[in-house]
Length: 418
Image (cartoon, rainbow, N blue to C red):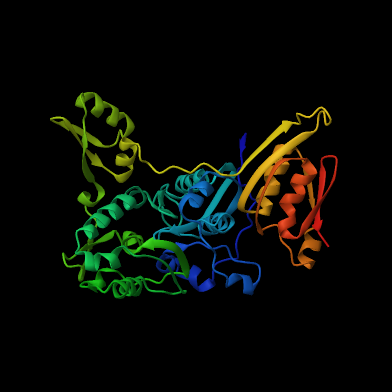
């Protein structure tokens, strides 16, 4: 049994950023949910559908190939965002026009981590023009990949968890608005101060010191559904700010992030041997402070430390797409392989790439004929087959996209069905 890994073709750099944004990138970089620029103006207006929940974690575990030969960092991330349906937030303090060189085949999660690592290695050294950049890291924040300065990325989930806990203390009548999940989007040149004002209006709260957010302009973007308090955190963290909510939930005070915001303290049962349990916690979360108090264990650290110590760390859900091949049991068909495959809403291109790689097939795609017929390998397909021949497997894969597969030996031609 082999896990199906989604693999897309090499990303081409997206269209260049608008000149006005490039000229004032230091002030305008802003919060980006990076979207690859589509080939046509009509396609460019389409909002992507971002993955969430188990589908998001499956996408992070699936394999992707990158071949970035000196393209802008923002374009590199936008390619991953569009190809995999995974929303990416690029912190306003990161220059998206600095270049990135990275080639390889990785799980999508590692592709983001490697991109941040290579960016940091190249652009943080002394003497880099126009100035050394901040080192970067990645946080997987709900259904969003956050890429930002190391300290912000390391602590954004912890800060968000602290604010969720604060919101839980608000009266129930007001609390519902502060935890309500919703998607969000805004246009080019949006002001973060206004975005916060809009969130405050949505929840019916008053921001007492909105001027704490410096004037800035952000590029158009969109986010998948997130709780209200998380949407606010993703904006404020880029200014090293967080918020305090009044007990009645009517007023909001913006304030700098402090060390206490970066540390969560929780108590766990120590069982019959607290010292042994504490030692096990220290091994799982080496960066956390772990102490015993009687028969209890007190852990102070980031949210990730608590997840690791308690064994509740979020992990990529196993892919539901699997491919198996076995020799037919029937003596009437000796030596004929049979295949079973289940696909749920994956791009046909990724499915074909996987089959070609694992079954040693040579794909020949008549892209011109597909375009003329209004068809595309980027269409998402779903199908399930059990114990079928290779030709039946290929036909099941391409038929939902209006295509047919013509095989001769290991060569497979993909053409319009009609």
